[in-house]
Length: 167
Image 1 (cartoon, helix red, strand yellow):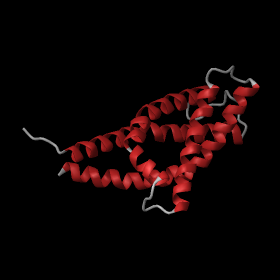
Image 2 (cartoon, one colour; image 1 turned 45 degrees about the vertical axis):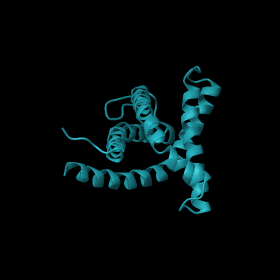
Image 3 (cartoon, helix red, strand yellow; image 1 turned 60 degrees about the vertical axis):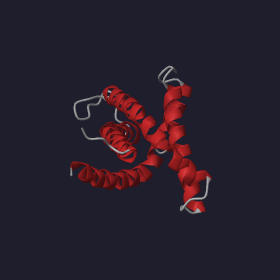
């Protein structure tokens, strides 16, 4: 019987959580962009089909993938909570500017999630619902560059750790 060291067990847990979160996050990102660019920016009617689905279909896929992403992202954040607290609030190798940037990105991400969640119980098309969705949309667009960086950086980590775990 083989046993794993506590460090390897945590590494394995990080690896699987990151890998599992990748697919729903990419679907959420793609559907959010599709909704934003086609139905908001290009003002297509809601009934216009895009890749076989209308706006309501893509919003449903976006919501389902966002829920799946959040369900895996919560453990991801909890696993990195010690790093986040150290990076933002304590002395770390990050400079003051990077600490502020990390804190700001965390705040924007939290606001993006909160505006989406706050819109759910509201009547679709109402003024407050529209306001929360518009804020969510714009904050989501702001998060694309740092999310891309995080995915590229995390993708390299996943490949490196995946190779190490395979050997």
